[in-house]
Length: 75
Image (tube, rainbow, N blue to C red; front, side, top):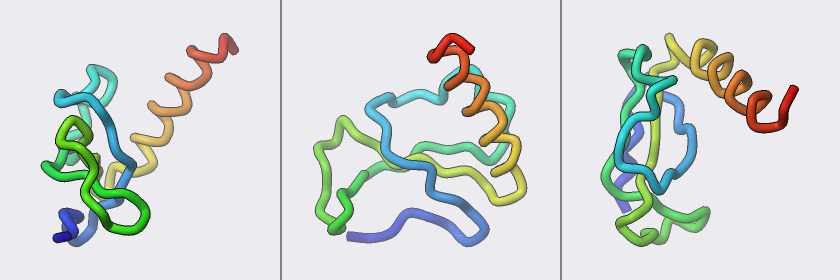
């Protein structure tokens, strides 16, 4: 399985969404890859996709993600 992570990117995880969430649209380095894999490197169904962000925007991504999480949790 080919690793899709580019140099200076951070792997965020796999998603079952094919579009960039509105909250992350302002991050110019956020992208969705083509083939997700499990922890052993085996391909997941094509409904899952890997997500990445450039190291330069990793902190901004984390801040947005925590805000989303707090909203879900109600605090």
